[in-house]
Image 1 (cartoon, helix red, strand yellow):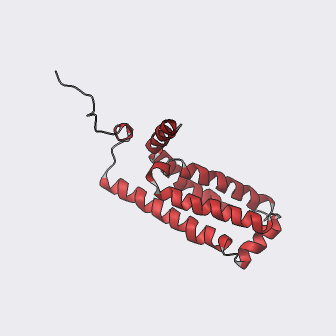
Image 2 (cartoon, one colour):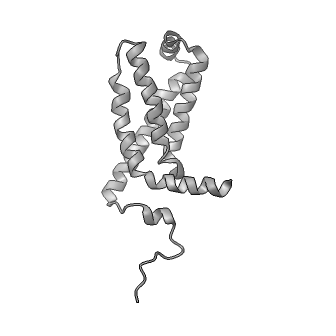
Image 3 (cartoon, one colour):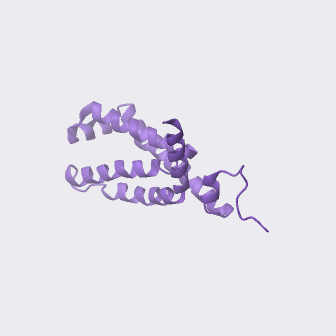
Length: 147
């Protein structure tokens, strides 16, 4: 009799994860790294160093420096989270939440100027969240063991 059970050494998340071609894995990793670089350097860095354009935008929003630094830290944490395997499923969802806020802010405060940017960034984040959903199960299992 042949057993279909996975060997005990195989991680449960690895069994649940769909098999992907090498090209698909490279594409997903490339998108992940590009998004992490964007959120770290193009988005978070200007806020964290207090660039004049970021200061002006957050003053216009009414959040000032504390809001600017908080959003910058959240974006930097998201950039790092994209690169941490166990967080790579939940981080794109969290970044989408930030982008929903950015979209609403662009519409209400800045009269729709650059409102498409958050929506465009959400597309690859949603793809990553879907592709890395097996990592969510790993994170849940890790959190259950810790509690």
